Image (cartoon, rainbow, N blue to C red; front, side, top):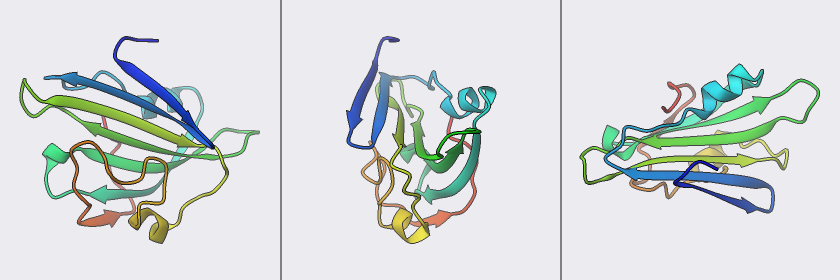
Length: 131
């Protein structure tokens, strides 16, 4: 396990969390999954009032021959050398796919309460992948 990564399991999924002061980030789970043949389809993206709160995207991940799962990726580069960069990945393998109403109410893997982010000001169906 790379240094600085915390992994925890919950009933239907897994959470991966990495934080480092002053960093721009070190991981890109979305590209790693695509390279391995996983198809990712956007379910929605919370819109935060400023970039310093980070970026998040909730996606449906499909692998041929397996049940799809929901994955949420949150990324925040450190705005200054003293603040934390954060990268969180939550995956839910229960088979439940949230609709937009569920997303907006925080019912998705890792839903709401991200490190430095306040409640979203809105949701978009598509957005760039968090890096």
